[in-house]
Length: 226
Image (cartoon, rainbow, N blue to C red; front, side, top):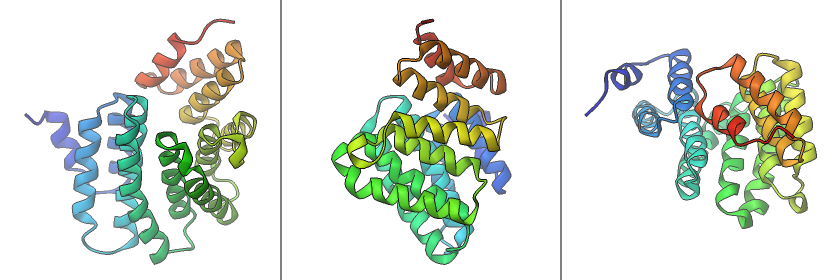
C-alpha cells in the first residue's frame, strides 16, 4: 500500500522538490520511499540530459546512505553502483559542473564500506572526482563533506583516515555553518578518534539544526559522555 506521503514524494518534479523529499525520507530512514523516488528519477532519465542523470545519481546516493545506516552493505553498494553510471553520464554531458563531479565522487566512496578491497579502484575515483569538484568550486561545503566521508571509510593505506576526514568536516562547516550533515559526520569522526565528549557536542548541534534525523539520534545515544 502506497502511503499519502509517498504519493506526494513521487509527484515531485523540480530539483528543489527532489532534494526536499529525499531529505525527508532520509531523515526517517524510509528506504522504500527513497527507492521509489530513485525509480521515478530513472524514468525521467530516459531522456539523456545531464540534469536528469544527476537526479538519478543523487537519489541513488541517498538510497546507498540509508542502506549503509541500516547495515545493509550489499544494498548500499548496489545503489551506489547504479548511481555511478548516471553520475558518469552527467559528467560526460556537462564536465564543467562541479556538482556532477561531487556526486560521482560521493557514490564511488559509498561503494568502499561494502568492499574495502575496492578501495584502490573506487577510492581513486572518489578522490579525483571530489578534488575536481573543489577545483571548479573551491567553496563547496558539499564537496568537503563528501571528501570527508570518503576519507572516513577509506583506510589510511589508501590515503584516507580519521584525521583527514575530521579536517574536511570542519572545512564543510566553515563554508556552511548550518549543515547538519557536516556536524553529524564530524561527530562520527571525533568518536572514531576517541573524542567522545566533543563528538556528543557535534551530534547535539546536528540535531539542533535538523531535529528529524533518526540516525543522529541513534549516534548520540550510543556515544559515551567521556
